[in-house]
Length: 212
Ligand SMILES: C[S@@+](CC[C@H](N)C(=O)[O-])C[C@H]1O[C@@H](n2cnc3c(N)ncnc32)[C@H](O)[C@@H]1O
Image (cartoon, rainbow, N blue to C red; front, side, top):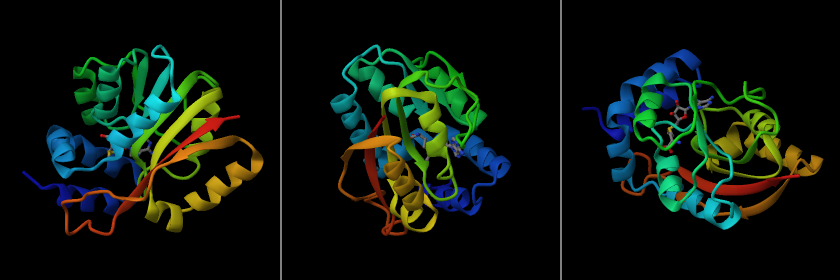
């Protein structure tokens, strides 16, 4: 079995190339949950905490964007949220998400400036581990805003490297200036994989916005 660091290196090296990345996640899917939870990565804990703070309706229609094997929705379901869809390009990750029986619908799709889902149809969009280098691009925030209804909470983890070097700072500044959303919350910057020496420099925040 490959370790977490090996898989991370492979998925980052795919550099966002769709087919290569999806194939790698297909192969990782079987070991993913065990490795994620053992890694101590806190982004699902923080993101679900912010959902609890900002999404008060347990019937809210929530999209788990880049849902992978469904860990975020599993926690949201355990918290009482009942109306969650998932989106991910990897069929292997989606197959495991399906088995958790916490999603209304699962969509095999990419996040980008256009997402093939109905505009203004979600009360909240959550994304953990997806807005980072080599994964969804900054324009994914435009796509998320299109499918979110006015007033929807948008809660996502964001890596420091994606913010500083892969265009997310510019995109977030642009959305702030346009009045497309307003900021609700931002976690402290945290170490993504607290037990990994190799990933010692990787940092994330979790951010929360409301679509205007
Ligand atoms: C690190 S995993 C996170 C999975 C899950 N959100 C979690 O926290 O356990 C990243 C996920 O993003 C998906 N992904 C990669 N590029 C994507 C894109 N452009 N749009 C949507 N999902 C993408 C991958 O298939 C993978 O399942």
